[in-house]
Length: 66
Image: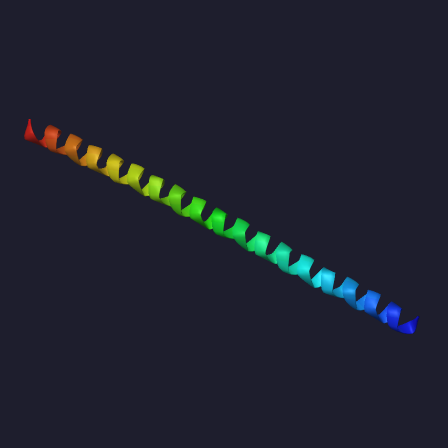
């Protein structure tokens, strides 16, 4: 009976380890996705800034050329 209790306890603890590892892996996958989304957002912002800068330069050239 004593061995059965020990085996059940060890099995329960092993299950917790698997669940913890699974939770950690899921958390890491979510963080990776958030990082990738952040990079895409940053890239879009950079492109918009570049477009605005180019438009301002072209506008300044047109006013200077008149």
